[in-house]
Each structure stands twice: as C-alpha cells, then as structure tokens.
Length: 275
Image (cartoon, one colour):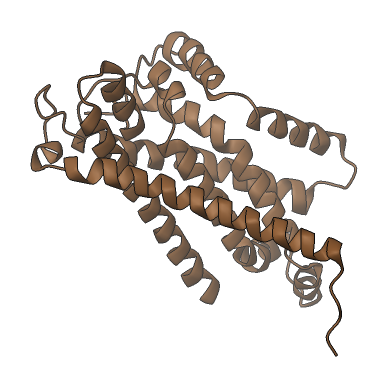
C-alpha cells in the first residue's frame, strides 16, 4: 500500500529537485561558456616553449602551475595530515590545546587570499629575502590550504569506526601501528578529497601569487625564480585588454588541468581503497 504524500513533503521534494537542477545547469553553462569562448582560440603558437608578446605562450605558466602545486602539497599535506592524526588519535578529549588549534584553523580558512598574499610579501619575500619566487608562493599557498587539509583529514579519521581500532588493539598492535596500518588506509578517500579541494584552490589562486611569486612569463630556473601560474597568466592577459581571446583559451587549459588532476586523484583513491 502506497503512503499518501503530504503537501509539505511534495513541496520539499520540489525544492530539492529544483536546487539540483539549478546547480547542474549553472555548472553546465559555465563549462560550456568557457569551451565555446576558448576552444576556437587554441592555436599552436599558444603552446610554444618560449613566451613572447606575439604568441603569449601558456607553456611556461603550465609548467609553473604544476611545480607550484607539487611544492605546495609537499609542504601542506604532511603537516595537515600529521596534525589531524594528533588531534584525533593522540590528544585527550577536552584538551584546551586541541580547541585552540581547531578555532585557529577555522579562522585561517576564512581569511581572504589577498591577506595571505600580503603576509607572504612581508615575511617570505621581504623579511626572509626570498624575493618574488616559487618558494615564497609555495609556502604562502601551503599556509592557505593547510586548514582545509587538516579539517578534511580530521573528519576522515573520525569517520573510521572505533571497532577498527579496538580490533587492532585486541590483536596486540600498538597505537602507532594501528594508526598507520588500519586507520589511515581507511581514511585515504576522505583525505584525498581534501587534497583535491586544496589543488583546486592552489591552481586557481591569483591574488596571493601576484604578491609572492610575481608575474614573470617564463619557465622558472630554480626555486627562487619568479614565475606566473596559469591563473595569474590568464589574469594578466585579460587585464591588459589586448589578449582577451588568448585569456579564454588559457581558461580552457586551466579547466582541463583541474579536471585531469581531480580524475587522477580519484583513480588513485580507488586503487588504494581496493588495495
């Protein structure tokens, strides 16, 4: 016997389905708009190894984006994951230090990116005398995404059933072995979800990098070289007003890069979960 739906339930169902439809439509429109505007302007000159004012090549910016992402993650991921492990697995409940760390992380996650850029400019660029460089940009971005990685890792660890830990302890395993052999592998999909979000923020960041990494359009020679990422490259082209079409083409490459990185991370998560 089918239950008769109440008017309020029908109303809520309409809201849920309508919200889903609006969200999907906006996403499809945004991706379609970028592709329609940018794909026709993808030409071989955009993929030259050397940047000039004539070809406005995106290759140096593409290489810089990959390097910047890897450097930032190498700094932020270990710090965020190990901090989350301490908060969940080692710290006592009700610990005041844990409360301070969580409040600080939530506060940092709400700070505008330009504030991080100004901090990086004053500390890494000026005080440490690194200048406008990849290193200054990577450290600034790692501080920016650290709260995100830490909180998502913490939630992933909390989602692991306590029975896993109790079973491991019952078999004689210590806390360290339990964390790294039982708990952490089970939480990897959640941790990678946080890393994917962090990658998206790193790849799309402009304000913080303009103040720390600079806007030099070339492949960086070392960690202390100034360079521009794809997002900064796109901003520079659009702000000049002379290369609007090339800016749309850069947006297409940036979109493909983000989708590719997300797909790769999802594939790795599935492999690690099955293993």
